[in-house]
Length: 314
Image (cartoon, rainbow, N blue to C red; front, side, top):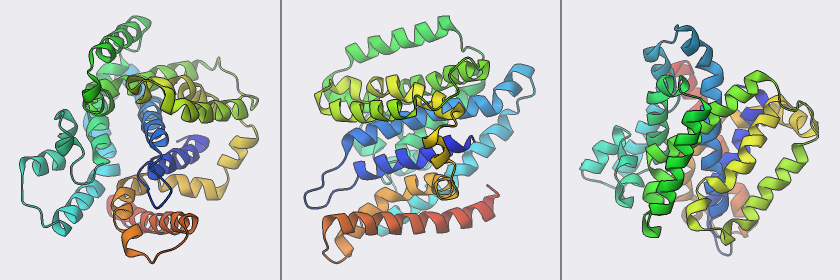
C-alpha cells in the first residue's frame, strides 16, 4: 500500500475508536465514526483496484487467490472476536450467531442482527460483498455506470424512511458498495496521473475534513453516512497518494507507518476493549482514561498483529 495512505488509515480508525468511547463528559464522536467508515470503504475500492485492476484488464486475475488473500486479513480475527464475545456473554447459539460467523449479518435490516456480537463486524460483512463483486465491477468503471449508480443511490436516499437510515444507508452492502465503487473510479483517475502531485492542497484538505466533522450535527441524517464526506475523502486520498508535502512526509515516518500497520486489529478489537476497560480500570481523569485505553488497545493490536502475521503469513 502507498505509505501515506497506510498512515492515514490509523488516523481514521482512531476517529472510529472515539465514536465508541464515552466516559464522564466525553460523548461518542459520532461524526468521526461515520467519516472513518466512509473513508475505509472508498480507500478499499481504491487500493484493491490499484493492486488488482491490471490483472482484471489483462485476464490474469485469480478470483480464488484474491478472495483468500482478502479473507486472511480479517476473517480469522473476526472469528476469534466472535468466539470471545460468545463465551464471555454465555450466549446461546442463534441464527444471528451463524449469520455473524458467515459475515451475512449486514444483509438483515435489524440492529439486533447487523450490530450483533462485535458490532464493528458489520463492516466486514459489507466489504466482503464488495470484494465478491470486484472483478465484475471493475470492468464497469465507466461514466455511464457511475451516473447510473449515483442516480440509484439518490433515489434510495430519498425513499429511505428516517427510522431505517442505519439499516439501509449505513450498513446495507448494496448501498455501501457505492463508496467502494467511487474508490475504483478514483483509482482510474490516479492511474492517469493528471492530478496535482504537490503538497499545496494537504492542509486545505485537512481543514475541509475538520469542517465536515463540524457541520455533521447540522446535516440531514441521510447525508451523514457518506455523501457529506465523499466531497473531502475523494480528493484527500487522491492528493495523499501522490503528494510529497510536509504532512505526507510526517505520514511516512516509521512511527506513523507502524501505527498504520495496526489498523485492522485495532478496528476489530477496540469496541470490545472499550466495553471493558472504562468499567474495570480505576477512576481517573477523563483525558488520562482516553490515553490509557488507547495505549492498551495499541498494545493488544500489536500483539495480535504479530501472532496473526506469523500464523497466516500476512
